[in-house]
Amino acid sequence: MIAALRLLKWKGGLLAALLVSLALGTVVPRPLTTPAGAAVQGEMQILLLANPIHTDIALPVDDEIRAAFADLVPSGLPVDMPGVEYLIIGWGGRSFYIETPTWGDIRPLPVLKALTIDRSVLHVSVAGPIDPGHPTVRPLIVTPEERSRMIAAIRESFIRDGGLPVAIPGAAYGADDVFFEAKGAFNALIGCNTWTAAVLREGGVRTGWWTPLPQLLDLSIDLHHGA
View 1 (cartoon, one colour):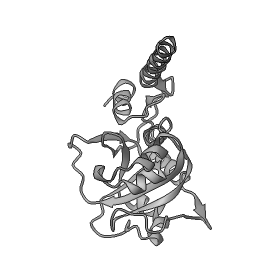
View 2: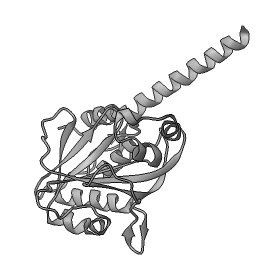
View 3: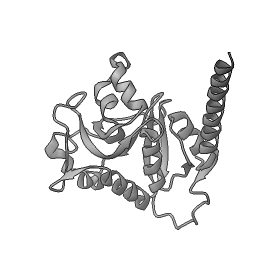
View 4: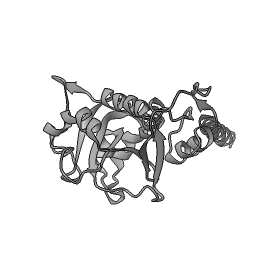
């Protein structure tokens, strides 16, 4: 009986510590101080896409995007295909990301790897028009220079061989996406949404210090970055 009470108390303490960490991770801004304002030379819109557990960044395709990600085309990603308006990038755990294209495909082993530790991948896809007013879409305004820094951060996340990103053979949801080997290890605490937040910060979007869930990332942007 005493052992059970101790276990229950330990679990309660662990849960409380987790909740406090999540709260502080959202409320404490990163960076801690607001960067000094600079002269704004043009504005560009990017999109933050979210589902209940994952976030992606959608970049409107223009000449800069086509040039920056031209090295993805040899892997079969149709970045330069007519009608493509957005390049969508997300980072995540290899097993869960590749093997779970829909909620109906969830299986125990990929979930276990996602909750522990797994190799990481980048999922890159192209899309036509995206409605910025959709509930799962958040438009964010950045300067051209800030977007260029985001592009550089994304490119830095790819593992390369001979200068080219390494595509994963046979890993795709359809004809308009490709999975690539990525730098870093994935786990539930340092996962897809913390990667998204780090890339957004490169683009001048202030976030919370630790935002492992899409809802926390979105709330932290409300708190620290504004409209």
